[in-house]
Image 1 (cartoon, helix red, strand yellow):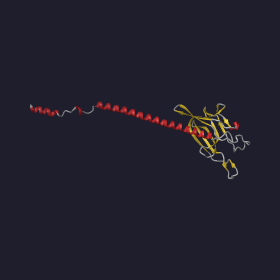
Image 2: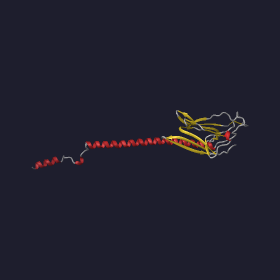
Image 3: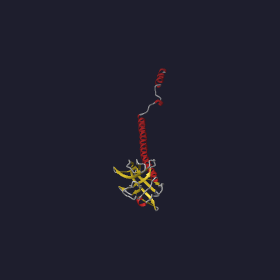
Length: 231
């Protein structure tokens, strides 16, 4: 009898304790399902945030480009100079300066043209500057041309307008509109020519429009010529 009890006790020591039992197949499958769901949520959130950051960088760059160009134009308009707006000899207008704004459109979108003579804010002297819109691959591009107006000749006794090198630069791609207006008699008008008015406008308003994910955004800058009405 004692031998039988001892055998039973000896065999009972091999019974596994519940604390040391492994995972069942159902538990493993449930864990994998939960892990898959969590990874899917994290993956989706990661790429959603990444797309948002990419869009933010793209739009931020567009805002920065537009504000930078508007700041350039404001400085150049404030440095505009008017001298001999109506030359006595139309065939020789080497010493003529101008401030001209034309109202145009491309594909029904505003596409003003601005031409002025101004001191460059970069300190390179008196320049002829133009801003206008071109169409390229069914998109509108704001273009700038600039060239020196006066160049000293070899004869120091006189100053002549000699041929000089300028440049053409694409300032902003993919705009929706470019508008230049002047305040005249408490109204904003879109055309101006100093050969007719004989004076610079008092206030100029420049606007650039662009697309922000289907929403049209317009940024505007105001400028007032500071170098006097006429020399």
